[in-house]
Length: 381
Image (cartoon, rainbow, N blue to C red; front, top):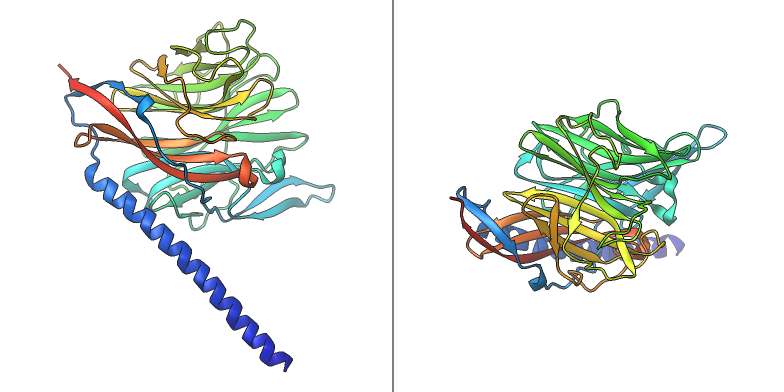
């Protein structure tokens, strides 16, 4: 009788699991169809066209409430016996997304991502993981990869804030490290997204003097830019108290970046204080599309290390002076470092943005959103 009952239970559980899988598959197919339909109307802006402004105040969308799945194993520090702590993750325990979308597939996939685990808000697991995707929604580990691509530092330290950049067919993965009173930026490179070179140090600085939180690397023409959130500012500005946004420039993707206020780590200027008097910028991402620089900023309550985070979108025509709207782009609190990709629709006279929104809620999870930003453009004479 027990065998019969067990068999019936297995069949029932299998049916439930199948129904759940089919339900998720149907949901994803709908989302994927939306992506495909969107792509039919979206083209990179024609040469000879120059964007003059974005109407960020017109952004209006309903944020997704379905967390994305990143199946992997978070690996922490070694114990006294040399054994690393491990936690299997799926829907929750993820943050710091950095996503790239390609017009043509790169090593078999249109989307590539770097994210960090953060289960139970435990920093020992904040080590860079790499994923790939056909549609930006269903993510998987590249076949043959060994995640994380960089393990936890020895001692009481941690990694954080990953960022991807592609240059001349090479994928760069940057991250930030905090160890023994020193903070630093590191990078590793790959030509296939699976095998990664030995890490190289980009720069370092004293942990209480300045900061490069949430680094965002961009190549524009022959120069490389690194934007970062800088803490410990002694002179308040028009949009911040002690935490502002700065930018470094170099002619090399690894060397030449120096987080020194007196040596080119320049303050990014913002037209107002869009997040109000009670918040500062906390994490951000910057990307350049055609002639416009777009910045996605997550805020924090004063001294809150990301608490009360809201999302704001800004743009610039020179990469240093940015315009923001005085309200967040969506009505959710608890957002964290998020990522995005933008394409232009000449047909609809707008920029269509695909966003991967990290949340402190839901046990640290990442969500997928799409919205449009109306734009004005003119002939580039």
